[in-house]
Structure formats: structure tokens, C-alpha cells
Image 1 (tube, helix red, strand yellow):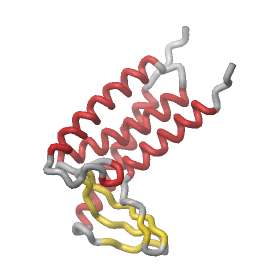
Image 2 (cartoon, helix red, strand yellow; image 1 turned 45 degrees about the horizontal axis):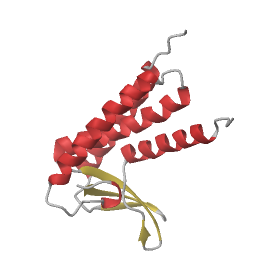
Image 3 (cartoon, one colour; image 1 turned 90 degrees about the horizontal axis):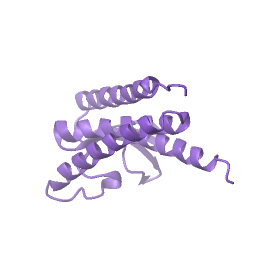
Image 4 (cartoon, helix red, strand yellow; image 1 turned 30 degrees about the horizontal axis):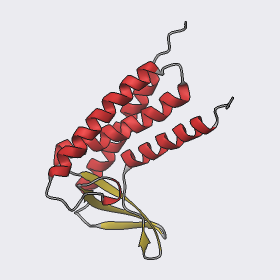
Length: 157
């Protein structure tokens, strides 16, 4: 049996984390909380923080969610690494998981570092704004999309 290396997938994970953290540090250095800069008629850069999860889920609570989501991210990351090791012969699955892992760790770093996630990508139509997000969130979305394509492209018996 051929030994499949996970090096390229973990390198992709590291690249996602690096880009995510650099962009967040740049935003925090250049912007004040709530400050925004219009880029196009449908996109702003804006510095905001999310102490909750996706779409601000549990953001209004008194701080316990920081440790809940930190623990959840750690457990998910460990699970993903174990699953990737067991599935190393499935390249598309590992690719999707590498993106998800990079995003999870990117947001985990924020939670440990400052207790909340830095968001800055703001897309909108008219006055309707999609919740702001970041590179880590984008990587998670890409990873899930790859996993869905992988699952739906499998030949069914």
C-alpha cells in the first residue's frame, strides 16, 4: 500500500492560519473598532469583533461562550487531524478538512489571544449587510463546499 503524505494539506492549513492572522493584525493596526472603508458598492472593510459563533450566535452572553467555543475548536481540530490521518488516501476529503482546520485554528487563536474573533469583511446590498466575517470563516466555508462536492460526486451503488 502506498504511503500518502499529509504534508501538503498541513502546509495549506498553516498558510490559511498565516493569511488569516496577518490580515486580522493589519485590520487591528489600521482601523478602530467600527471604522469602515468602502471598497466597492457592495463591500466594505470594517473592524468588528464577535465573541460568539457564526452570525453572532451566543454573542450576547457574559463570557462563558469564549471558553465553550475555545474548547469546541480544540476538540474539532484534534478530531480533524485524526480523521485526516485515517483518510490520507482521500485527497479531496483531506483538502476540505485542511481548509476547515486552518479556519478553526485561525479563529481559535483569536479567542485565546483576545477573547473574541476579529471580523472585517463586510458584504452588503443596499442597507442589508451580511454578517462581517474573516479569512478563517472563508476557509471553513471553502472546506465545507469541497466536502459537499466530494460527497455528492461519489458514485452510488
